[in-house]
Image (cartoon, rainbow, N blue to C red):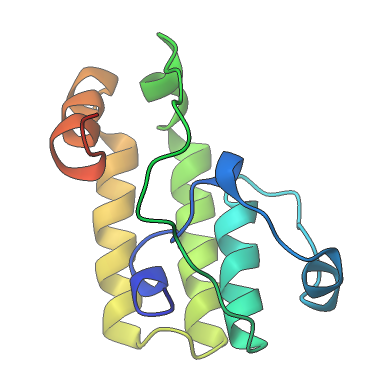
Length: 127
C-alpha cells in the first residue's frame, strides 16, 4: 500500500474503515480537494498500515458531471501542493514528485471526454 501510494491514492474513499484515534493522531482531514489521499499518506508515515480487500464491495454510480469535476485549474493546484508535500515529508523522491505532477496535471487539464476514456481504459477495472 505504501509503495502504491507513491503514485496514486491507495483507497477508494467511500469504502474505507479506520480507527478514529489513528486518524486523529495523523492530523485528520485537512479540507482540501485531495484530503483523503493526503490523510492516507500521513497515516502511513506515522506507521499505520492499510489493506485493500481483493473483492469489490462497492458499486459507485458515476454522474454525467463526474469527469468534468475531476479537471480544471483548482485540481492542478491541489495536485502540485499535494505531491510537493509528499516530497517534503520524504514520502517520495524529487523524480517521483515531478513524474506525479506531470502525469496528474496533464490528466486534470485534458478535456472531460478524453479524461473519461483514460479513466475507463487505465484507472478503473470493469465489473
